[in-house]
Image 1: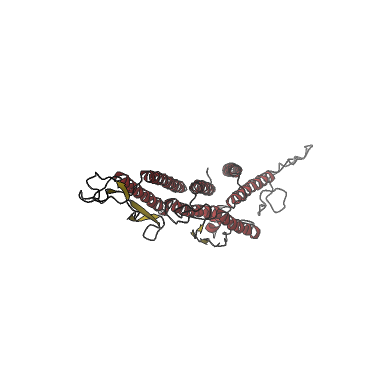
Image 2 (image 1 turned 90 degrees about the horizontal axis):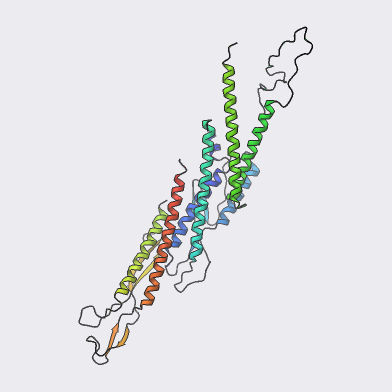
Length: 145
Length: 108
Length: 133
C-alpha cells in the first residue's frame, strides 16, 4: 500500500507510459526506415495525438476523483494502443502521407526522419523527468541532500 | 495540517504550557507575551507553499505529457523551483531536528 | 529493446546487398560472353526487397536476386568475332549505367537513413540507462 502510493504519485505513471510509448514508436519508425526502398510498402505510424488524448482523459479523471493524486492511472485502450500493466501493445496504423511512387511505396523520407528525431527528444524528456522524480523520492527518504 | 497533540501552540489548555518567569512581588510589569507571528504559523505557511509549488510542477508535467501545453522551458522551470523549495524545507527541518536534539541534551 | 536495432540492421544489410548488385551490374555492363565462344551477354541483376525480416519479425530482407527479363540490347557490329553471321547483330547486356548510378545513389541514401535511425535508437537506450544512476 505504501509503495504503490509512492510509485503512483503525481506525474510518474504518466511519464512511465510516455516513455513506453516512445520506445514502441521507435520500433515502428525503424521499420519504416528499413523499408525505404521496398516496393509496394505502406509506412505505418502510431498517432501521438491519440495517445496524448487518452492519457489526458485518464489524468483528468484521476484529478477529479482523487485529490491526493496517488491512485494508479486507469487509461482506456484505444483502437491501436493497449495499456497493459508495465507495457504497451500497439497496432500501428498506415499513414497516407505522400503520393505513391513508381515502385508502389509511398514513404515520405523527410517526415519519417523528423519523426525519429522528435521521438528521441520526447523519450529523453520523459526519462529525465522520471529520473528527477526518483531522485526527489530518494532525497526525502534519505533526509539528506 | 495541524499538530494533533497540541504541543507547539502555547495557548491551548491541553498543551504543555512553557515555563514563564515568575513575576516577583515587587516588579512593576508582569512578563509580556511575545508579539509577531508564531513560529508554527510561519512553518505551516512554508509547508503549504512548498506543497503548492510541487502540485503546480506535477500539473505542468502532466499537461505537457498530455499535449495540452508545449513550452518545455516553463515546465522545467516550475520543476526546478519546486525542487529547490523542497530541498530548502528539508534543510530547515534538519536544522530544527538538530536544535531539538541539542535542547534535549541540556541537563536541568 | 534490441528489436529496433535488429530492424535497422536488416535495413542496412538489404541496402548493402542492393549496392553490391548495382556494382556487379556496372562492372559487367560490357560483358558480351560467358564462355568465350557464344554471344551470351550478362543479364542485369535486380535485388528484390520485401517487407519483414524473413522470419516473421519486422524489418526488410532481400527475397531473391532476380534476373531482369528485359531484352538484350541489339547492336550492329558485323566485324565483331561473336556477332551473328547472317545479321551481324551483337547482343549486349541490358544494363544502362545511368539507371545503375541512380540506383546506387538511392541505395546509399537509404543506407545513411538507416544509420541515423540506429543511432537514434542507441541514444534512447543510453538515456534509459541513466535512470539508474
